[in-house]
Length: 277
Image 1: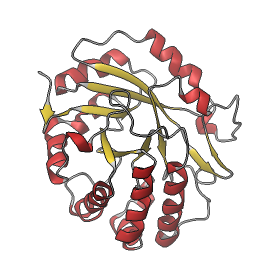
Image 2: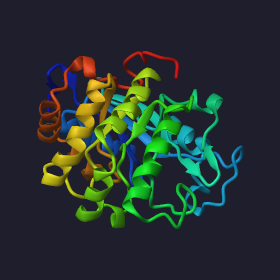
Image 3: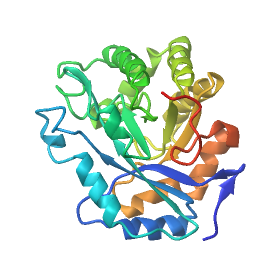
Image 4: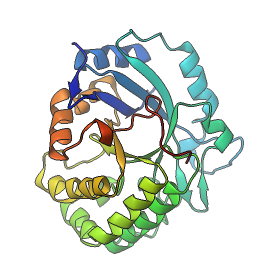
């Protein structure tokens, strides 16, 4: 497929993971079939050699692993730019981030989530389970992630990534507690700090075109745009076939629904960051 642009925005996917048994070559082939021009491999990372953690999930997710993957990866074709990032973790128990500032310079960009709620007791207090608590906690962690020097992209903002927290009634209650003024304050801070806001087409259980998504996340991203934020697109793919979450059709739907133009997009590793972070 030829290169695809929508309102002068190149089709780009800045958040995907290479699971064991998968190959970078398969991702490249699938990305080419979709017309993707920029592909960002964003492996999970927590550097346990410098920042110890008891979380079993992060015992083998080191910077060295990402750098080895990059050194052995095939060269992409000329019409596809391949970038290498890391999705680290902002842990709250205690408050810390899983990569040092000097280490982040080895990567093209660093993605930091603030709402990874599938790791209770590590990324959020294990006894936190009420919508109002989660809403207040996501506001707190969003602001803290925005202030981190290593953060290039804030991943899936205000998406409580645990299936039990993404039921329609629960998620509606969360967003009922997130007033437009509170969200505007958060995104204004992100814009001031030059942080990119990820529009993740793969992390939401409800699906892009479901009514609740449109009632919650579309208005949220509109607030972020008015606050001066810039965005990148992502699939959060775990397998090559998941790249189709960010198909040309879905990308066009989001871009047109949010009235995004090239000046609203900042592709990490391609565009120059406005701020030093």
